[in-house]
Length: 268
Image (cartoon, rainbow, N blue to C red):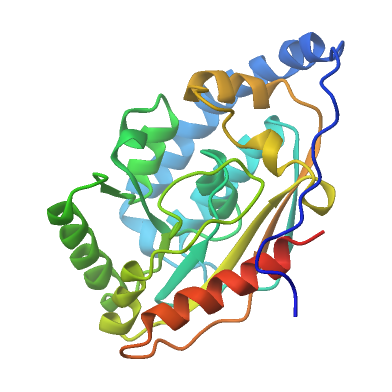
């Protein structure tokens, strides 16, 4: 059995990155084009009456637009995308580890999901606006009333056939270990009678960039955004793991099993 705490590879001692200025020269114009040209196209596809039509693959037009735009943004940041496994089709509760703001974009690059995220994200430049357009449900931390409202929205969406994604750790960590999963949020899968699929998000070869991608202590969003934009090329992996059947009264066991499967996938 693997350890319930993933092994981590500490980043090497910081050295001056002489290529960082060159990466900014190349990537900033691409980012501007992606925002000014690709984003309006994606939003148009999402807003049109044809958004709910399905392609030959069975994927909705608006979901394909979200995936394409998200994948393009990650490539501009230098990420090489890799998917392991397949996401469940239909209404599903996706449960993922939380490393940084870029997690939602990474999962959206592989599967369109309406996420539950902290209320602060709605005020982040660009990312917050796009997250809102993608159907993000916002939660005010520390508010039981907000949590009840969020859970009601989640159940309603899943009963309507849509997928929802959550980060049961309750926030981002330092990228070095997986924190305890809050089980209460998994009750929504029981109430909506849908399956739970754990998802492991891993950065760098064998996950050696988890701590680099994560927020440094006290690091604001804009600083992390710019730091990743100028960083070297890295792999970003999405592991869709074996799903769990929702069991009435078993949300704690579901949370622990989902966490154990993610820990196993994150281990180098």
